[in-house]
Amino acid sequence: MRNLVLTAALLAFSLISPGEAYAATEAGTVDRVIENVTGSGGQPLALSLQLLLIMGLMTLLPSLVLMMTSFTRVLVVLAILRQAIGLQQSPPNQVLIGLSLFLSFFIMSPTLERVNDNAIAPYAAGEMGADQAISAAGDEFHGFMIQQTRESDLEMFADIAGVGGFERPSDVPFSILLPAFVTSELKTAFQIGFMLFLPFLVIDLVVSSVLMSLGMMMMSPMLVSLPFKLLLFVLVDGWAMLMGSLAASYS
Image (cartoon, rainbow, N blue to C red; front, side):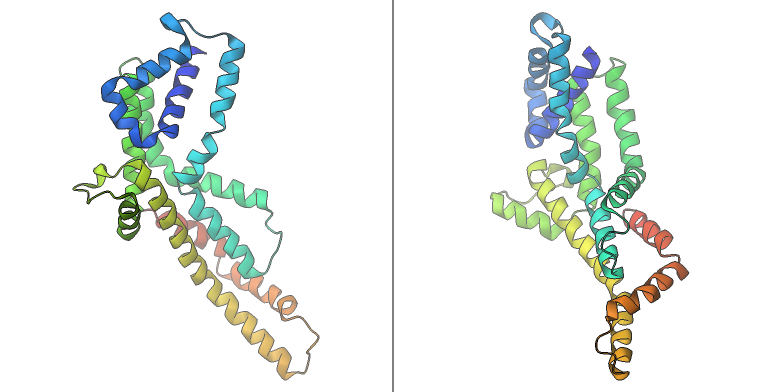
């Protein structure tokens, strides 16, 4: 239980103050935080307090999943696809979220494996201190995020923060990288969504033109075009193409 509390404390510290995580390691701030969490003299807190602390720290995990992984891009693209086909509740939101979550695990698996090898496993074995584990895990996520972030977005947030140019990508702090990464992910998701919309929009236009020429003004074009859009998506094996394209976009 004490190891679980320590791990949760490290995760909370890196999420609450990601921009100062590296600077804090030099001053021993992480060690003092852990000492305060576990109690004076290294004695563990009561079980009820440990459970309360862990449940509180678990509320921060959704922010990590949403803002520092590929989850945002995948979920937005799937939502746009459902809208482009013309389906309102199929697949349901639970299916889209679950699919986005597990596809994100697949995309993030190389990064997570490096975090486990370079940070979690050495820390659990006692070969690395808490400050070094936070630094190593942060480096891996920083490298993934910086590769997917547009330079223009980084420059925009750096100018807003009044920070000068960075000599190396590793010099970009999390306080600037996080909003720039999310902005880049949304831009990419909407670009992919635009490309998905085009073939379905063509089908809607063709069906609408045919109905107008036949004088069927009262017939809904969406109702008629929906089977054709579903047929097109199935014939081209749309789900496999979309999942493969999303995963390949992070290569």
